[in-house]
Image (cartoon, rainbow, N blue to C red; front, side, top):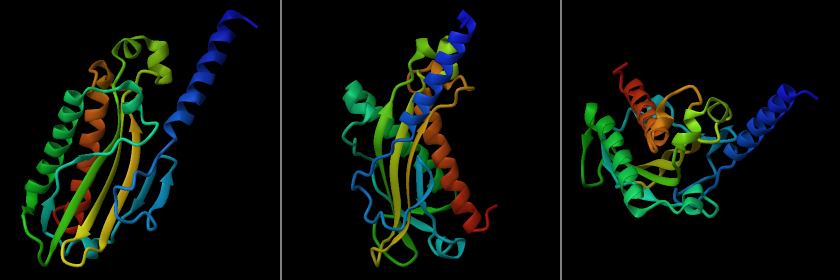
Length: 207
């Protein structure tokens, strides 16, 4: 086998291994009910309400983002500093706040048409900048950062779960976000916030 063939085989093997690693998703016990979740992929489980249900809620109690690192998480393996965890927690809270404040009201007390938004970061992985600079390792994604999260909407009066999601994502091999140690993670958080806004806005007729 030629040297170039060996390189191709190694790259393909690494891509396969990276894909398997990304497919692992854990349940931490943070959300109130996992039984309604349906698998969208190996890394995404969702229970999404109909627009007719979601449109009833135009006020939100936004709980502070929690950190629930599961056993075996990259965050625990890498021993991410408390300072970095706090920064990413604040970043997620800011992304969510922008969504809610865009068209909706943030309130403190339960009541009619009020939903509680609960979110937890369950894993964090830094981007490996040096690996993302090198084309071979950038291609196979070994240096990509990522985030896992659990979130749910709860009716503030009945306590009934309105919707829920568990997801684990890694960065995009074709983007430049991985050139900052938290660039991939922040981009994923922004994407989640955008998807939340799109879903809320569609249900309330803003789209």
